[in-house]
Length: 118
Length: 114
Image (cartoon, rainbow over all chains, first blue to last red; front, side):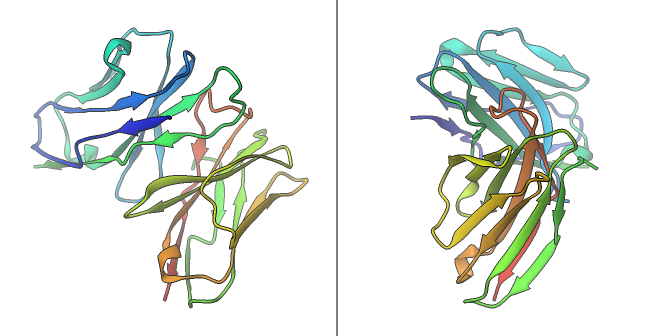
């Protein structure tokens, strides 16, 4: 069965600290996509990144970086030099895109609440 | 502005009532998705429509129903409301039927059942 686990419920850091949010997934498909979304206090869900199962290159976007490791079924997200504006709930999600799947259903983890204190 | 429009933003209603949540997808998007976000259940997929047809169904209660109209906007109808239906309901849209590229969410409708 498909599953996404974000074991860290809440993380609190002081501004400028680096922080890593963990995401572990389960799927039987060989083709799938992984996503991270951010939900700031205002409530909307903001797309951050997409990664397909055939691309294990790490990605860096400014202070954000993502580490995808198929061997451990993990897709971790690191914020370098965190800022107060990074305070939000972060969700990892999985989409199965191969085989007989022809839907757009995303399986979300429970989310990690990040609090960055000044 | 994500381009996905949800109305109303807030809704307060009594138990037993019926409400309709509305979603206009981003221009050009054919798929519409509905999700429920509650404190205890997290983000749960409810249903997907693609170009007017139901494509996938998730953990949607029988008291809930949805449809997508010819102009591609969608409505989620919630009836016989219970206190536990209080949640944030998100609509999202994408061009294709699969979520290969992820999708864009609206800002949500916060439903409070009292």
